[in-house]
Amino acid sequence: MSGHSKWATIKRKKGAADAKRGQLFSKLSRAIIVAAKEGGADPDANAALSAAIQKARDNSMPKDNIDRAIQRGAGSGDGEAYEAMLYEGYGPGGVAVLLSILTDNKNRTAADVRHIFTKHGGSLGTPGTVAWQFDRKGVLVIEAEGVDEDAIMEAAVEGGAEDVQLDGSAWQITTDPSDLMAVREAVEGAGFTAASADLTMIPQNTVALEEGDARKVLRLIDALEDCDDVQDVYANFDISEEMLEAVAG
View 1 (cartoon, rainbow, N blue to C red):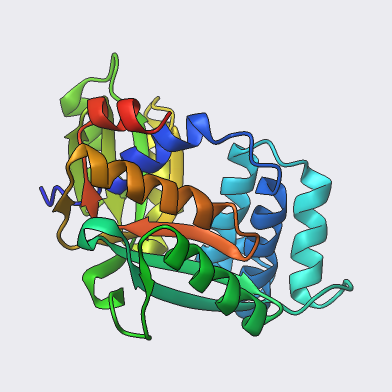
View 2: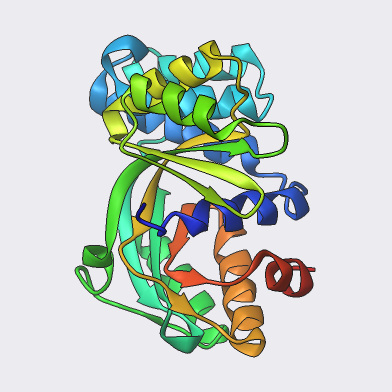
């Protein structure tokens, strides 16, 4: 087992406290628009779009909003032209930070992100600075309580999963990006419920942080996630669930 999908657990637990963010639907819409624009409006033939739609559904986004976003991406609706980019940098404690960006104004986004990094003790890097330390994967999170290990392993492997591991209070199922939805269907068809299912960037190695640096890194990540143009944040640090609960408040 790789042991490097800890970020899925960190994001899930942070998300419970960060649900207040009002721009969630806007970011979900942007992801759908760009996926439909780049790969077509048919989710059956576009894994990125399928994953973006499912994530929107998981977050209770209305069907009309999802349909409008697909139409805009397919070119049948009006709206801004978003460009997908990756920004890279370092946070406190030497943590590598990778940002998924969707923007209609690159100059504004670069200035905003650079300011956030500087304010929170980090630094924005040049392309290629940290991206090589991450692998693009699909990750499903299944709450571990009441879940039989053999049953979840069998369902995930039969569905085509690459890796299954228990991480604290949740099972992490890692897939090839194109197999994410097929594995989710197999797992849920076997009677399990996915707490989340995302296309994500998994760090190849992680940095262990003391409490002080962990607080600084989480403040940096919170500020980046509050930036409208930042779609998602990935980082290569690892802390215990107990420390996360202590410092994320």
